[in-house]
Image (cartoon, rainbow, N blue to C red; front, side, top):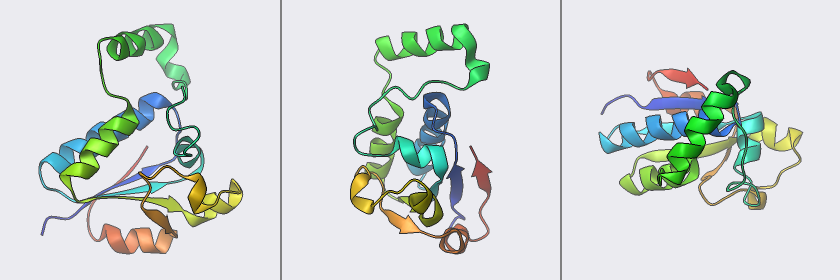
Length: 137
C-alpha cells in the first residue's frame, strides 16, 4: 500500500484551507490515503457554526489575492469544505482534530462539522502517518 499523504493544518484562512483541500482531493483521486490533522486556527474553521463563514486570506494575498479568490468563487469554484467533502466521498481521507487544540479552544466533538472524523493526539497522528510525508500548512 502506498504511504499516506499527511497534512497538518494550522492556518484557518480560506486560501490555505483551499490549498489543503485541493492536495487532499488530488491524492484521494489517485487512491492515495490522506490523514489530515487539524490544529489551532484550522480547527476553529471546522466548527459546525463557522465552516461556511469567510475566514479571510493570508496577509500576503493582499488586495489582488482577494479579488482573484472572489472571482473564482463567483465563477463557481467549490469552497474548501465542499472540496474536502468530495475528497472524502472518494475514500481514504481521515480528518482528525488535535486533542490539545480542542482543549485550548474549549471545543467538544459535537462543536465540529461532520467532516471531522474524530479527535486524536499527535502520537496517534504520527502512527497513522507511517513513513509518508508530513506537510504543514
